[in-house]
Image (cartoon, rainbow, N blue to C red; front, side, top):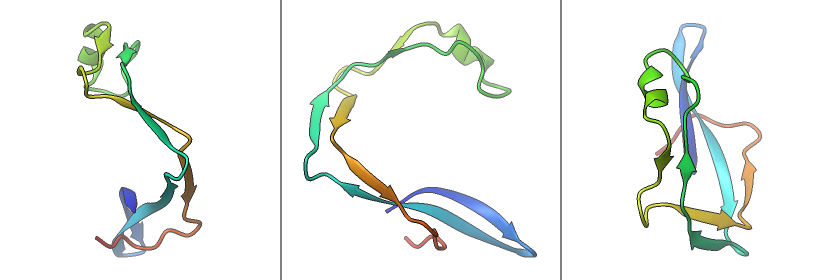
Amino acid sequence: MPVVGADVTLGYVVRTVCSYWEWDYTKTEVAPATSRHQFLQSLRDGMEWWVQLGPLSSDPNGTFAIRGLRWRLAAQPPACSF
């Protein structure tokens, strides 16, 4: 499953490389959750207004927690294929 992609320059060739994950849901529990968070500093330029938002909460019934999920990242990620 491709999760994160990035364009990488190899000499004069640009290719998209993905991270491939294997997720094992065999012993997984999923439950509704609530998120309460606040941005205390800007993560990068142009995000200063996120700090000004103050405390935030997740969308009701829009957040969930996963417990017991096992995952593994591919050792040598190949080029992306969708």
